[in-house]
Length: 372
Image (tube, rainbow, N blue to C red; front, top):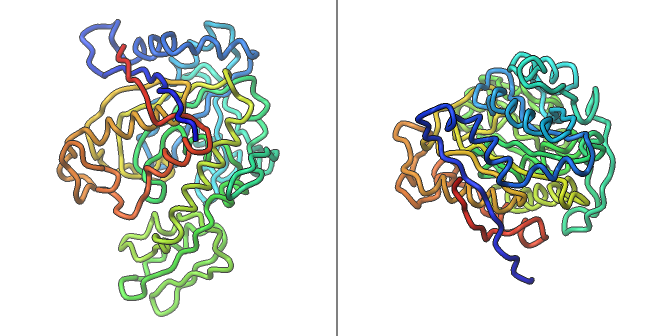
């Protein structure tokens, strides 16, 4: 494979001693320096892909900061809308009505952000189209219609940990975030099992399972593997960590499938897509969790690029360069330079997101970090 040249990633730290250095001003400067004005040349309808956060979560990207992104797009003639897709698991974003209500309750209404919210895959998550990709796991993938119909995309991501993917950033926001539930199911093929010795029968897994694949007998949970769709919500809510998958055999293909889905959201978008990653509130869990744990490292800054691989690699490196926060979910790897995501979730292979994405042509792991 031919080595890709390094991509430019722009970085703004969070120090501010006046109004010209606040986060809104930093976002405007990142927008201008990264050349995101070009996104508006493709047409006026720009999808701003965000994560509205599950009810109970409060560490999603602040809608006031999203407003700065919207304002910059409008200044250059765009007609932006905020968007996301339905979840595979049951929760507060499982259908278009609940999802919209959650977005409004979390402050993403047009009164705050200056843009309407459009759930990209429709009322019940079945508004999508196939995109040909021709990779190892998929020949085609399912992408939400409003994502495909938008003239351009600006992917706004909260960079944080993830129990299965290792971390969630631009690549995961493209992959899971732009796919309908059927596409998320394609990516989440692992099947889960319960450790009967440690299960306490709390039934949290039963309550969240969208397929009713969990049963409780004699205060012990069990999972019907034929009914399980692999969403992983049972594992996320399990208080005793009694639910797991076969990490050795299933995690690598899961991560590769995720990356292949990201390629479908990117396909044909040359010059029509940009990425902003927020390295704040860097929690161990996805914003799909109905809680927000304490950060594992201090807040770092905001990054922008036109390369999803480079921006995620830069975020990955910046997080790992920090000293881990004592008292957080980190059980090891607190020293600067150590892998914080492995410190939070010892089975993960987050670096595969980066290496496999580069292998199939999504971008470059080589980057030049330019501080503005």
